[in-house]
Image (cartoon, rainbow, N blue to C red; front, side, top):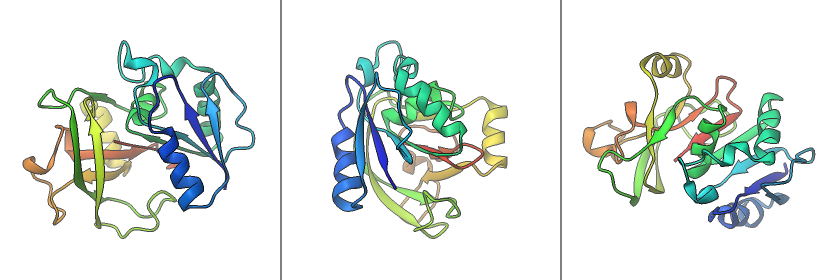
Length: 201
């Protein structure tokens, strides 16, 4: 499986992704400059974290117009895999590949911490190595990571089982204290209806 890691001006986690895909997973990986558009050799597109285009206007708002994102939309619409992490999640919502939006954290400050997440589904390629209900520990670092969606969109996401990860306490309970940024319904990661596009903070 070949990975393509997008590099925007302002990306700062692209090399971290390559370290994982090449160094840990031992999979072929190509870094893709934002002006490139050929993804024909790529199986999984990864939109990394950072501050794409300086996060001017809104996080991910300018990145969505780049040539590589037009190709990424085509890649996703063909049923191929797309993963957006942190700023990449923001870019995917701006591009319309995932519903909702990421807004300012509840307490209006940047969060850098490790938090527990509860796995909500394990029937997709993204989560098949986990057990449903398993609690995993991941690092987060964001200022605009609070997931928001209109009530009808939120209901649709819930009804279609598009939530893959929720913020929780170490025992898997959803409490106000375990929600670090004020995300609606404790949402930390979602997929599209087809399950081939994943965004997580």
